[in-house]
Image (tube, rainbow over all chains, first blue to last red; front, top):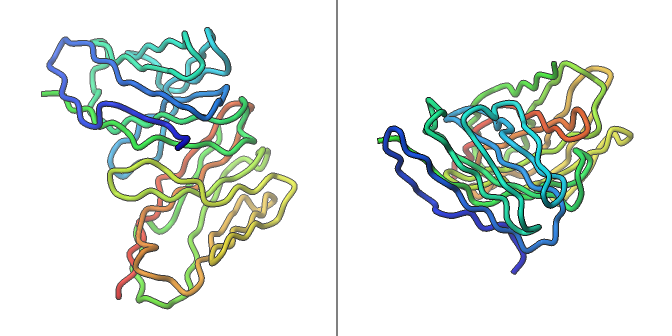
Length: 114
Length: 111
C-alpha cells in the first residue's frame, strides 16, 4: 500500500543527545514536510523539501536539521540545541510543491526528553 | 501574518445531530483551505480541499464552505455518528509553500 511511514513511533531522548526521526514515502511525491504538534495546538512547519537535495526552513527550524538525499526519504534530526523537543512530530508529503496540493500525513512520532 | 482560529476548542453532541465546525482566518489572500481529521495519537487525514475559487466541497456526509471575503469556513457534518469523534483541524494555504493550521476542534459524538 502507498503511504508515509514514520519511525520510531515513540522515542526518548536524554539531555544533550541528538536523535533522528525517519520518514519514508512510496507515493512518488516530490514535496515532503516536517511538522511539530504540541498538545492542544495546531501544527507548525519545521522544514520542507520541494525536490531531492533541496530543503528550506519553516517557521521553527532552530535546533532541527534535515536531509533529502533520496526522493522517498526525509529524515529529521532533533539536535541538542532544541531546548524543548518534547512533542508529536508529523511527516507529510504532496505530489508537488505548493499549498494547492492535497497533503498526506504519516502516523507521527512521539519524542520525549527524559 | 496569517492566523487561523477554530472555535469552539471542544464540542460534544448526541448521535444523529447535524453540526457545524467553524474556522476563521485573518488574511483573505489564500490559495485554498483544507479540513483534516486527527484521531488521538495519529496523523492527519485530509477530508476536503477547497480551492480559493470555489465556494464549497462535499464528500459523503461532509460539506465544507468557504467565504474568503469574510475569512470564514465551515465544516458541516450531517447525521453525526460516534465514529465521527475526533479532532478536526482546518488549514489555510497561505503563501506558496505554507499551510497555516488552526488549533482544532475536539468533537465527541455521544451514543
